[in-house]
Amino acid sequence: MTALSLFRAVLGADFERLAPVLQRHYDLSLGQTATLSGTMQTWARFAWMRLFIPFMPKNAQDVPVVVRNAGVCNARGDICFEWRREFRYPSGMQRSDTLTQPAPAWAQKFGACVMDVFPQPAPIGIVLALEVSEDGQSLTQRAPGPQFLLVGQRLVWLPPFARLQVHALERALDAQRIYTEVTIRHPLLGDLFGYRGELFAGLTHQEF
Figure 1: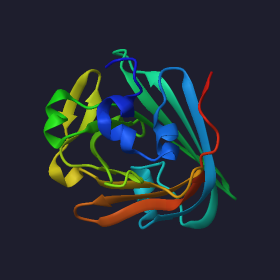
Figure 2: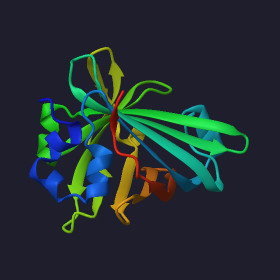
Figure 3: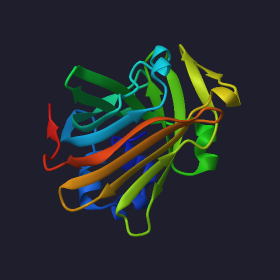
Figure 4: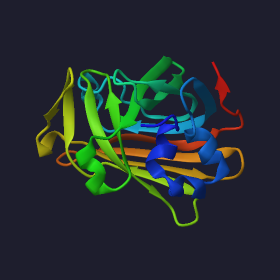
Protein backbone atom coordinates (compact mmCIF):
# COMPACT_ATOMS: atom_id res chain seq x y z
CA MET A 1 0.00 0.00 0.00
CA THR A 2 1.08 3.57 -0.59
CA ALA A 3 0.49 6.58 1.65
CA LEU A 4 -2.90 7.03 0.00
CA SER A 5 -5.99 6.41 2.07
CA LEU A 6 -7.21 2.80 1.85
CA PHE A 7 -10.39 3.42 -0.16
CA ARG A 8 -8.70 5.86 -2.55
CA ALA A 9 -5.92 3.33 -3.19
CA VAL A 10 -8.33 0.41 -3.71
CA LEU A 11 -10.91 2.20 -5.85
CA GLY A 12 -8.41 4.13 -7.97
CA ALA A 13 -10.10 6.27 -10.62
CA ASP A 14 -13.54 5.24 -9.36
CA PHE A 15 -12.85 7.08 -6.12
CA GLU A 16 -12.79 10.37 -8.04
CA ARG A 17 -16.34 9.68 -9.24
CA LEU A 18 -17.70 9.49 -5.68
CA ALA A 19 -19.82 12.38 -4.42
CA PRO A 20 -17.71 14.85 -2.39
CA VAL A 21 -19.45 13.97 0.89
CA LEU A 22 -18.53 10.29 0.39
CA GLN A 23 -14.96 11.21 -0.53
CA ARG A 24 -14.62 13.17 2.71
CA HIS A 25 -15.95 10.19 4.63
CA TYR A 26 -13.55 7.64 3.15
CA ASP A 27 -10.44 9.63 2.26
CA LEU A 28 -8.65 9.21 5.61
CA SER A 29 -4.92 8.64 5.53
CA LEU A 30 -2.75 7.87 8.55
CA GLY A 31 -3.47 10.22 11.45
CA GLN A 32 -6.70 11.67 10.05
CA THR A 33 -10.16 11.34 11.59
CA ALA A 34 -13.78 12.10 10.74
CA THR A 35 -16.92 12.13 12.88
CA LEU A 36 -20.45 11.61 11.61
CA SER A 37 -23.69 11.72 13.59
CA GLY A 38 -27.38 11.15 13.07
CA THR A 39 -30.23 8.78 13.93
CA MET A 40 -30.87 5.20 12.88
CA GLN A 41 -33.56 2.55 12.89
CA THR A 42 -31.89 -0.60 14.23
CA TRP A 43 -33.25 -4.14 14.26
CA ALA A 44 -32.38 -7.74 15.07
CA ARG A 45 -34.43 -10.92 14.58
CA PHE A 46 -32.96 -13.25 17.20
CA ALA A 47 -31.98 -11.93 20.64
CA TRP A 48 -30.11 -15.17 21.40
CA MET A 49 -27.67 -14.38 18.59
CA ARG A 50 -26.02 -11.83 20.90
CA LEU A 51 -24.30 -14.80 22.54
CA PHE A 52 -22.31 -15.09 19.30
CA ILE A 53 -22.51 -11.51 17.99
CA PRO A 54 -22.41 -9.25 21.08
CA PHE A 55 -22.37 -6.04 19.02
CA MET A 56 -25.65 -6.93 17.27
CA PRO A 57 -28.03 -3.94 17.51
CA LYS A 58 -31.38 -3.86 19.31
CA ASN A 59 -34.85 -3.20 17.91
CA ALA A 60 -35.35 0.55 18.16
CA GLN A 61 -36.36 3.67 16.25
CA ASP A 62 -34.57 7.04 16.08
CA VAL A 63 -31.44 5.84 17.87
CA PRO A 64 -28.77 8.58 18.16
CA VAL A 65 -25.62 7.33 16.45
CA VAL A 66 -22.07 8.67 16.36
CA VAL A 67 -19.58 7.17 13.90
CA ARG A 68 -15.89 7.89 14.48
CA ASN A 69 -13.50 6.94 11.68
CA ALA A 70 -9.71 7.12 11.57
CA GLY A 71 -6.85 6.32 9.25
CA VAL A 72 -4.61 3.85 11.10
CA CYS A 73 -1.92 1.24 10.40
CA ASN A 74 -2.22 -2.49 11.02
CA ALA A 75 0.62 -4.71 12.26
CA ARG A 76 2.02 -5.01 8.71
CA GLY A 77 2.13 -1.25 8.27
CA ASP A 78 -0.79 -1.08 5.81
CA ILE A 79 -2.97 2.03 5.82
CA CYS A 80 -6.37 0.91 7.19
CA PHE A 81 -9.74 2.47 8.00
CA GLU A 82 -11.01 2.19 11.57
CA TRP A 83 -14.73 2.34 12.37
CA ARG A 84 -16.23 3.05 15.79
CA ARG A 85 -20.02 3.05 15.76
CA GLU A 86 -21.77 4.22 18.94
CA PHE A 87 -25.49 3.40 19.17
CA ARG A 88 -26.83 5.45 22.08
CA TYR A 89 -29.89 3.58 23.31
CA PRO A 90 -31.87 4.80 26.35
CA SER A 91 -30.56 1.71 28.18
CA GLY A 92 -26.94 2.66 27.44
CA MET A 93 -24.39 2.94 24.67
CA GLN A 94 -23.58 -0.04 22.47
CA ARG A 95 -20.35 0.22 20.47
CA SER A 96 -19.11 -1.85 17.56
CA ASP A 97 -15.57 -1.63 16.18
CA THR A 98 -14.34 -2.71 12.76
CA LEU A 99 -10.94 -2.46 11.10
CA THR A 100 -11.07 -2.29 7.31
CA GLN A 101 -7.76 -3.30 5.76
CA PRO A 102 -6.37 -4.38 2.37
CA ALA A 103 -7.86 -7.63 1.10
CA PRO A 104 -5.68 -10.70 0.43
CA ALA A 105 -4.09 -10.72 -3.03
CA TRP A 106 -6.30 -13.58 -4.29
CA ALA A 107 -9.43 -11.46 -3.66
CA GLN A 108 -8.53 -9.29 -6.68
CA LYS A 109 -10.63 -11.70 -8.76
CA PHE A 110 -13.66 -10.01 -7.16
CA GLY A 111 -12.53 -6.58 -8.35
CA ALA A 112 -11.95 -3.70 -5.93
CA CYS A 113 -12.00 -5.29 -2.46
CA VAL A 114 -11.17 -4.61 1.17
CA MET A 115 -11.36 -6.89 4.22
CA ASP A 116 -13.38 -6.01 7.32
CA VAL A 117 -12.03 -7.46 10.57
CA PHE A 118 -14.44 -7.74 13.51
CA PRO A 119 -12.68 -8.24 16.86
CA GLN A 120 -15.62 -9.69 18.82
CA PRO A 121 -16.06 -12.39 19.97
CA ALA A 122 -13.16 -13.75 17.88
CA PRO A 123 -11.36 -11.97 15.03
CA ILE A 124 -13.35 -12.63 11.85
CA GLY A 125 -12.31 -11.40 8.41
CA ILE A 126 -14.88 -10.73 5.68
CA VAL A 127 -13.80 -9.74 2.17
CA LEU A 128 -16.02 -6.98 0.78
CA ALA A 129 -16.32 -6.10 -2.90
CA LEU A 130 -16.76 -2.37 -3.54
CA GLU A 131 -18.96 -0.86 -6.24
CA VAL A 132 -19.37 2.82 -7.08
CA SER A 133 -22.67 3.67 -8.78
CA GLU A 134 -22.66 5.10 -12.29
CA ASP A 135 -23.60 8.55 -10.99
CA GLY A 136 -21.06 8.38 -8.15
CA GLN A 137 -23.75 9.04 -5.53
CA SER A 138 -23.43 5.71 -3.72
CA LEU A 139 -20.92 3.11 -2.60
CA THR A 140 -22.08 -0.50 -2.12
CA GLN A 141 -20.17 -3.19 -0.23
CA ARG A 142 -21.02 -6.90 -0.51
CA ALA A 143 -19.40 -10.10 0.74
CA PRO A 144 -18.71 -12.16 -2.42
CA GLY A 145 -16.63 -15.07 -1.17
CA PRO A 146 -14.72 -16.85 1.61
CA GLN A 147 -14.60 -15.61 5.20
CA PHE A 148 -12.09 -16.39 7.92
CA LEU A 149 -11.12 -16.68 11.51
CA LEU A 150 -7.87 -14.81 12.07
CA VAL A 151 -5.43 -16.84 14.12
CA GLY A 152 -2.25 -14.80 14.44
CA GLN A 153 -1.15 -14.19 10.85
CA ARG A 154 -3.12 -17.21 9.58
CA LEU A 155 -6.52 -17.16 7.88
CA VAL A 156 -8.69 -20.16 8.81
CA TRP A 157 -11.46 -20.49 6.24
CA LEU A 158 -15.02 -20.72 7.53
CA PRO A 159 -17.41 -23.30 6.01
CA PRO A 160 -20.18 -21.88 3.78
CA PHE A 161 -22.91 -22.32 6.43
CA ALA A 162 -20.93 -20.09 8.83
CA ARG A 163 -20.45 -17.20 6.41
CA LEU A 164 -22.45 -14.01 6.75
CA GLN A 165 -23.93 -12.23 3.75
CA VAL A 166 -23.34 -8.48 3.91
CA HIS A 167 -25.04 -5.69 2.01
CA ALA A 168 -23.96 -2.16 2.95
CA LEU A 169 -25.03 0.93 1.04
CA GLU A 170 -24.00 4.53 1.58
CA ARG A 171 -25.63 7.14 -0.61
CA ALA A 172 -25.02 10.88 -0.76
CA LEU A 173 -28.17 12.86 -0.03
CA ASP A 174 -26.59 16.30 -0.35
CA ALA A 175 -23.28 18.01 0.41
CA GLN A 176 -23.38 17.05 4.10
CA ARG A 177 -25.70 14.07 4.56
CA ILE A 178 -25.26 10.35 3.85
CA TYR A 179 -27.97 7.70 3.89
CA THR A 180 -26.64 4.41 5.33
CA GLU A 181 -28.28 0.99 5.15
CA VAL A 182 -26.65 -2.24 6.36
CA THR A 183 -28.19 -5.73 6.32
CA ILE A 184 -26.46 -8.84 7.68
CA ARG A 185 -27.90 -12.16 6.54
CA HIS A 186 -27.18 -15.83 7.26
CA PRO A 187 -27.58 -18.37 4.41
CA LEU A 188 -29.79 -20.64 6.58
CA LEU A 189 -31.42 -18.28 9.11
CA GLY A 190 -32.13 -15.39 6.74
CA ASP A 191 -31.87 -11.73 7.76
CA LEU A 192 -30.18 -11.40 11.16
CA PHE A 193 -29.78 -7.69 11.91
CA GLY A 194 -29.14 -4.30 10.41
CA TYR A 195 -29.66 -0.57 10.60
CA ARG A 196 -30.54 2.35 8.36
CA GLY A 197 -30.74 6.10 8.65
CA GLU A 198 -29.04 9.40 7.87
CA LEU A 199 -25.67 10.67 9.06
CA PHE A 200 -24.47 14.26 9.03
CA ALA A 201 -20.92 14.42 7.67
CA GLY A 202 -20.34 18.14 7.78
CA LEU A 203 -17.11 17.87 9.81
CA THR A 204 -14.04 17.53 7.61
CA HIS A 205 -11.29 15.18 8.71
CA GLN A 206 -8.54 16.54 10.90
CA GLU A 207 -5.15 15.56 12.20
CA PHE A 208 -5.08 14.01 15.66
